[in-house]
Amino acid sequence: MQKVISWERKFQVWQYSVSHSVLLLRSFHPQKYTTRIDVAFPAVTLMHLQPSYETLSVRQATEEERLRILGATAEKITHGNLFLLNEGEGYVHAADFSWHEDSGDHHTPSSFGPLRGTA
Image (spheres, rainbow, N blue to C red):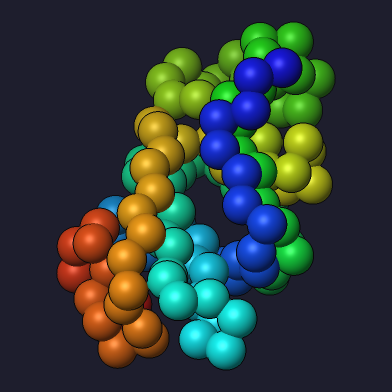
C-alpha cells in the first residue's frame, strides 16, 4: 500500500461544486497552524465522507480494494481513480487529486480557482 500524502492536522469538507464536480477539503486553524492546506478532487463521480477528519491521508486504492468497495458500481465507472481517505475511513472516486499549501485564510481564494464559497 503506497501512501500518497498525509497530514497530522484537522481537515473539513469545505466545498463541493455540483456544476464542476469538484470536492475541496481544507485545513485551516490560525491558532494551531501558520498555513492553510486545500486538497482538491476534480471530476468526482462518487464519494463517501465524514464532515471532518482529525488527520488526513490520501492514497489510490488498489484494484482489489476498488472492486471490494464499489462492488457492482465498479463496472459502471470506466474512468478515474478511487482514493482512500485514512485507509478507508472515507473515499472519493475522481479523475485525480492535488493539494496546495499557502498562508491564506478563510477570505483568500483557493489556488484551485474560483470555487464558489471558498473565498
